Length: 133
Image (cartoon, rainbow, N blue to C red; front, side, top):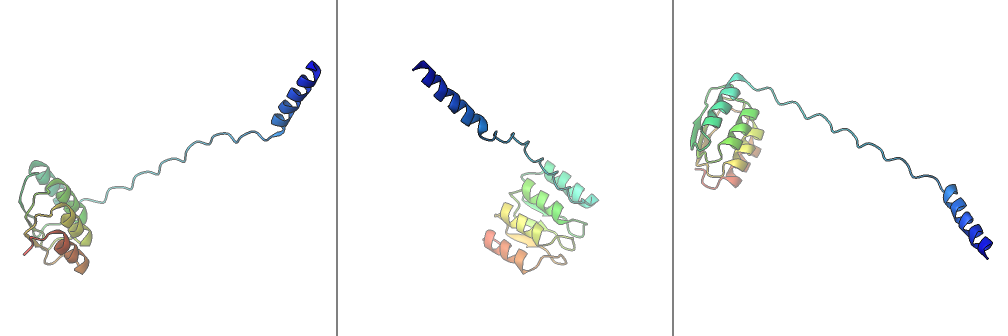
C-alpha cells in the first residue's frame, strides 16, 4: 500500500513537470517621455512671473504682447479670481480662451480682439462665465 501511494504521488509530480512553465514576468513598458513644454515667448514668461506674484489678482492687462496659449493657460491656472482680462492683439486661440473659461468663472469682461479665438472659445466663455457682459 505504501508503494501505491508513492506511485500516485510520483505521477502527480510527473504531470506537473509536463505542464509548461509560466512565462517569466515581463518588465513594464517604459513610460513615454513627457511632451516638451510649448515654446514660451518672453512676454509669456513675464506674464507667468506676474501671475506667480499676483495669484489673487482680479484684473490682468496684456494687450499687444506676444502672449500664446501657453501663457494664457498658465495665467488661468495661477489667477483663478480674475474678473477682467485684456489679451487683445495677442497669439491666444481657443485653447487659451477655454482654459480661462474653465479656471476663471468669475469673469465679467474678457477682451480678445485681434486674437485667434473663434466661436468655440467664445461659446466656452459664455457657458462657463455667466457674469460676462
